[in-house]
Length: 152
Length: 152
DNA sequence: TTGACTGCAAACGATTTGCAATTGC
DNA sequence: GCAATTGCAAATCGTTTGCAGTCAA
Image (cartoon, rainbow over all chains, first blue to last red):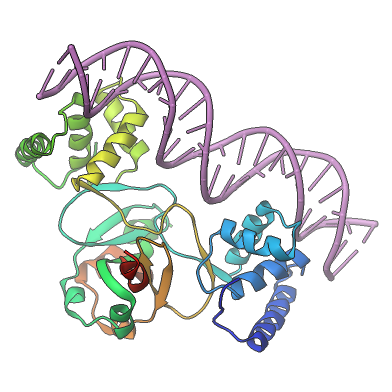
């Protein structure tokens, strides 16, 4: 299950809060749902749906992978968890230009490049240096581009 | 095919350069390979393999999707094109914490969070403001973590 | 009781692979 | 001529969906 951000007691408090929120927004408190949330709370390593499922199976052998996927989607919809932001599933390609960053419009999915030389000059947080060697540093910004905002 | 970063003439120059590089590194200059590269050069919108394939089909109806995938992989291996960096194909989840960024180790695929308050204070490039409304701003850094670097 | 939720199995989309035929060098 | 490359079809992987049974409220 690996180490968590939280102590056992904090986890219990957060689970209480989870129950309260679910009740408030009308999500049924099923065994599966609470266990999926607890497993994610108890994980520090950003597990994938499948990794999370494997962990939960140890405690609840009947848990199905579909339920994990569906529950993660539900919890995400209600803002209880976050999918780590990336370009959608399809990989996209580009000819190598100079280093740059990406603006992604959540509506039209278009990606715009931009440069940000200042970013290369500001000091990185100390933890980054402690972590290891950095090969690339990319900012991904999500938002709504003006065209999409206007055609709303 | 949509607008390109380049003029017709620049594209021809870049194609010349492409041929030279392929010859140098021992990649055969097949019709498909050059057309895939040209199509990508002529695209400004970060197409997916499938999108690129559709475009090429107009000019070369026999082009197979597999070849597009394979060629993109080959060109990427040789550093001629870049796959836009994201977390690998699998989506990963986390409980909502405070805003943070990600360090991803290319070897062990582990993701580490870090905060970077300074980033929130520096001014964004002007183009970003012109583009539209920003909802989120995430830095993804790729590299090799110390553990992996040591066990090498 | 009843609609929300689950498990199962089958479908799905993006990508990769084995293989035989083709092509650049 | 030979190895690299291609097209085809089938396999794979992560994820989603239809459906019938189950369970929280």
